[in-house]
Length: 137
Length: 169
Image 1 (tube, rainbow over the protein chains, first blue to last red):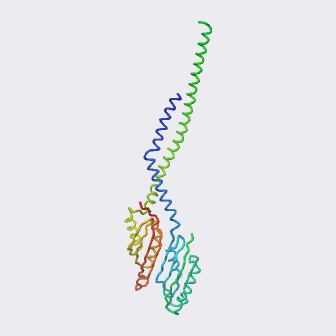
Image 2: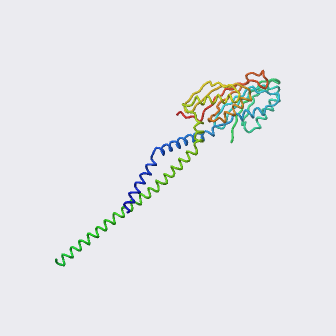
Image 3: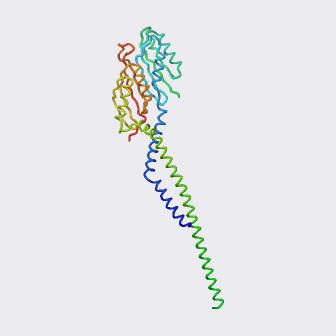
């Protein structure tokens, strides 16, 4: 009786093992491994995505009357910071000073550098402002 | 037959019988061990088989998400699809977009120029950040191009982006 049961069990075991080692299992493993690989890449990339649109919006929002922005140059430095240069024309010195102050008060702009050359002319002066922005979650 | 001979024969028979019983007992114990091992193996195999069924079910249920994940990756086989999607993104934002350069190594870098109103270029930038492909905007140069139209003044933007979700194959 015991011998018979052992023999029957061996057959069941072999059949189960065959099921596990067949193509379906290999295909499933491949699907899961490929998806895991892509997910790993995808998730590790998330920290590298920063938002220059946020920088543009803040610059435009802080623009005061009497000041025109003619160009914005954004250059990503690393996963959390970028250098941004703002180019424009200011009707008078005060408009530019107010704009620079507004930028400095925003924690996104960690440094704001406005050279003296920007305010040499009393009216209608071209300006370049160099800033570094730092993105925080 | 002498009693001694009879005794010897009986002793031999008893010895043989004991030997036989011992052998059968040994075989039974061995078979029991064998049966026990197979039962254990079968239990493990059944658990694995159940795991495979669950895995299969999970893969089936995740098919849509897996397809989305696949669609967010650019490979050498679907660069054209990617470029067309980028151009469509530009059209959706209401700007003109011309791809200048594309180079692929470990990651793919694309340079392109856009032209449109400031608002539309801003919209495009925000849409690009949420693009179905993962991209990083490395360089962006926005310049006023033609200010004759007041609020609808024309701006030009030069972008360099890195496609982060890129796999060569």
